Length: 271
Image (cartoon, rainbow, N blue to C red; front, top):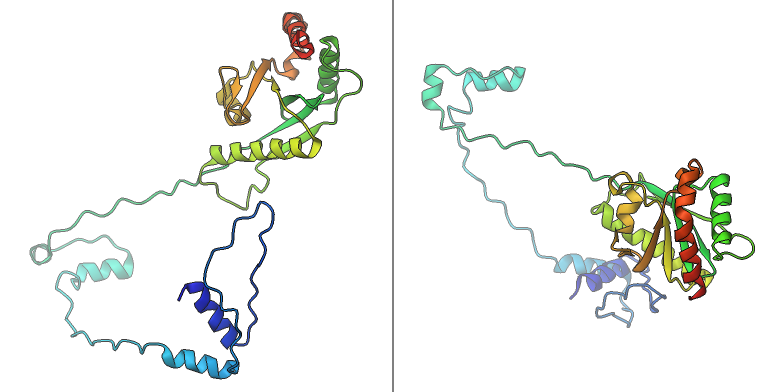
């Protein structure tokens, strides 16, 4: 008898109704297969409970171990004083001779608690094709700059798409992650896939604004797993540009970026 069937028998014997799902919900794991007892028992719950208790094996008698006197080493006066008063053990010559060879004390175990990666990003989808991602929350100045650059490159026509803000972890104080980086990558991939499914996006490329930031200083860059112009987390090619915050402060950075924006516009038009 499987544990699930036994549990149901005990619940029914105590008069507790057990409920089980009969249909699998979308995207839900299948229910563990077992032999369900579809025919309800006609025996009253009290009698069935007593029957289950009567069928339980009797507890094994506990054998009485012979009482042994404590050894001289464990009952030495210095050891007793150390236990009572937290005093260091100083053995007399007689105690040192009687005590056995000490075993090395186990080293204290240090459980290093893994902390989740902490990051956030703002994203928008241009034309349902290109996903623009910027670490952190975009300021109004950065949003206006991004809109101007995309319009100048011929990528954006009309108004800017709505901005979406994502923060990780969603429940920072609830769970302790086992694999912080892997869990963060799965969370970001699930968020982008869910947004694409709801909005009807067909993502072709990612515009990553933050190429001038070192990966070790950017948790989001680690999560995106950028390598050779590809994000393995999102399984999409990545075009990398400078951080929007630096572009708002450096006119030279804007001028240096313009040839790449022009090439980006040609790519958008399919040239």
